[in-house]
Length: 256
Image 1 (tube, one colour):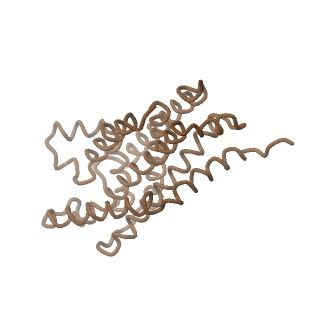
Image 2: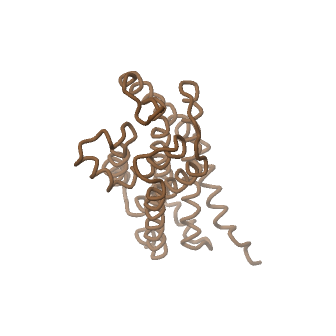
């Protein structure tokens, strides 16, 4: 009997989603609590900061940045940790022998990563709604940025999981790539507040465009044009997807 189209994709995607839903305290609740702690500390220390944008106080400015940072980090963590665990315990072979293409393999992991990112991002926004009234000027822009950013980092997580042979190597991706780029992306500040050199360097950080574009969805203002940010984020997502699918199709470090 011929298998239904996309059955392999859907089965793998469902398995990945159920994997993180079984440990919701670790995968969903903990990132939200961490974001609340950031908000409590920075809002307390910088409460007297002048408005970042006209009519936008610092606490309101901070919340979308924290939500997007949480999305980025958790989308990466979901796909990368799942792949490295499967490689370490040897269960990846059951996926590789299944009738599923490299593109379906990639899409299943990335869709699961995006849904986890959306859930924790929504959790941050809901939790912080008790402390700050947040406008939503352009919901479509905000949704486009959060989905594309989750897809880009979910794809980067696939690459990191494929390349890494040990948790130590995966931690290097997290600690020396994802964390620095996310913390230096303008989560806690506008690049207009930076010295010219650092402001210019920030424009080479793709995470900056994810966060700045996401903020545009809420406030209707941003440091750079939202169309420019969307083009950069979309290009990052497509580039990462192309690299990851080629690696999966060739069986790089996943087939003997």
